Length: 229
Image (tube, rainbow, N blue to C red; front, side, top):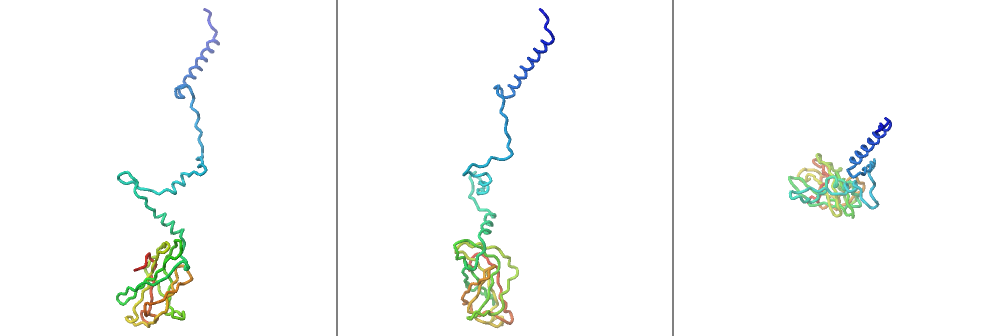
């Protein structure tokens, strides 16, 4: 048999190598002879479809539930953050949205204690925070005695008032017959809600109040939820 030339040997060797590489590539693609399609990586998430809800919105709107021992979701409870958001969105109660009354006296040890009550008469929720303004006046509208003082140690809190709900602040003074202060009988009490300028006029039926002399100071406390009854 005639010997083949070196070029023929090289050609046969290259052909065999190519065939072997082709077989290995087919095995690496999953064994079915088809190469895997490339994965396209995107730097941004696909937008939600029209009318759909994005994952971020779903997370914001959902209510977190705790899971009980049985594996069932426990009753959902509003978070403090949600309550704070409601209060912030409500806005301050304005004088025109409130009604003022003076509650029943709760005397003790020569001290007279009346609750000043503000009730939300509007159709929306609002808030009050801090001290009211107050002044006793006679029938002609003239103020009797100095402005009341703010009770020290009272920490203001924001009171959220739904329509028809109330908040109260304390009005206290020493009984003039006990303290010896100069008394007067007011015709009305003017009440100014926190951070407002306009006042509400309430007929005064609480008897004499101190207007000058010893122990004539009248004190106010901050607003708290309820009527103080």
